[in-house]
Amino acid sequence: MPHLTTRRTPRLAPLATLLLAGSLALAGCGGGNTSDDTRPRTTPAAKGTALQAVEGLTVKGRAPKTGYERKKFGTAWADTDRNGCGTRDDILAHQLRSVSRDSDGCKVLSGTLDPDPYTGTRISYVRGRSKVDIDHLVALSDAWQKGAHQWTARKRLAFANDPLNLVAADSSANRQKGDGDAATWLPSNKSYLCTYVAGQVSVKKKYGLWVTQAEKDAMTRVLGRCPDLKLP
Image (cartoon, rainbow, N blue to C red; front, side, top):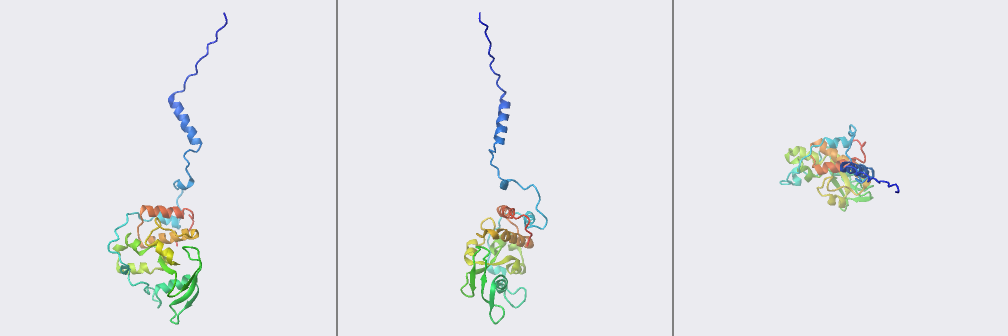
């Protein structure tokens, strides 16, 4: 009789072993598609940077806008530094180029904003028909909803005229911004993003204003691109 060879059926691996192998295979092929931008920071922000300052801002919900009026922040462009000129003209004279003043030594009659920080374009300034605004980095209404409603009139006046919070900018961009914060509006000029957000952080830190969680996340995202930028 011919010799019969018995073929053994391979033993099936336990189910747990197969599941583990499958998990390892998926992990090895990068199926999670996790980018560096979404990973949490593993090192603390450097001391004195705007990024570190964000971490110290208080996070709270936005308070109601009820009761807000521009006049609650005092006379517009008051001469708070007592140099004889209003704040608006002080900022124009400081931030424009080729400035021409009136005979009173204060009123800025013409100049050039080059570049406009919000759009990166060049804008000619002529008093009375200008496309240049003086913007509050932290809008007055935003400040009102995040702590300023609790301030004294004197502190609100100082806030509204603080050069740290003021920037000459394209009027159209300023109107698009409205009272938006970093979570709802950012300049189209990418090269100014870090400076813009760092300025807002500096103002909120100085005056003890809080931020919403969405605002803090947006600030952290922008400043994560320039982690060594010092706080203004």
